[in-house]
Image (cartoon, rainbow, N blue to C red; front, top):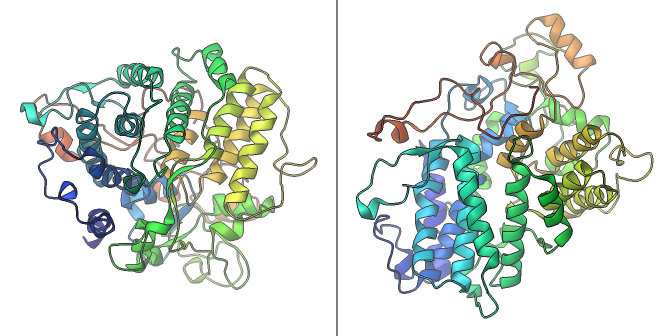
Length: 501
């Protein structure tokens, strides 16, 4: 179970960087954090805890497999359960976020005055984290959660609809506060290094995200979203844990680099779904996202690790083929919210409103992601593959979603999974791969730009892909309210209402 220790080790390893302050004692009682004389000292632990959950063992790998960036290697078995659509709960991520990071953020908020910098960071990041939790699992304990100090250990489950309503109320209240005199200690802010204006922009961008997540529900108000989009003031710098904080030592690395050092990436190869999309369109990000074989880039059919034949009829069994692999730079960043993410949100809102500004923000989103990877060329010019389609609303939304899918690779895996389920792009191909002839057809006539249902997961979700994880066992069994467990990964969260697979 070595992999389960990495997230916690990473947090502990930050203590020397912060001077081993008593307020960073990882053995503190999470139910007794309401009175902190130095609340800012807990801030970096909370920030890194959120980031480590997003790109850690469960959300990082699960998001990559379910977004069809990666698939299981043919000669090992570490991640078979993800391609098999087994009822996984992402329990490590749940524990890191709730009660972990959210308890810390609640303690900071309770020990800070409204209008202070600490309050701004704690509340903005708390709303963000709650959004991550409910978007991942759906209905969760919310209104009665984090009340262990009041001996409430079995909080009732609340509907995602009610949670979103409250998150919108909280973000509006936060944005209405006066932070003109606010100060944030830069030594304890790993995201924006004490920049109050950047945190206010983060909060406003978060509101935009919350509004658009409801695009397929009756709660979505396009005119309100459009007014917010036109008001400006969104992030101009990606909110992230900068890779410079990591060290090349056990327990002090980026979580994915830590897993790589432990040998887990020996089990991971590139998915044909993403590789074919990038190669077919000559996307320059291909070399940044995958390590090529000696003969170039090749991905495997999603979840086809058990097949013992020769899909491409080249005389080499699939299990003996070379496939593109994945590696992370030692100084890799972990974005919480990226500038390209926000630009894609703006592009979608303007596209839904039929406004020409949609192209401006779509182009900006694509080019900002290219720039992040050090690529100066454009792919959005006239005649290029990522050119703005200027088509119907749905055609424009599809273009945004497809570029968002590429942009989140190696950076925002959970976000890619969530947004794919909201927009339904990439769409699921009608091609079912179960026989040798299916594989040959898939290899030579791959449905570029579409998902294929994992071969190992065929029949599991009635021809669909996962919608949400089940609840962690402890969340169900320890709650005396007897909440119901999900029966499969096919249960949609409330806002996932768009027709189609």
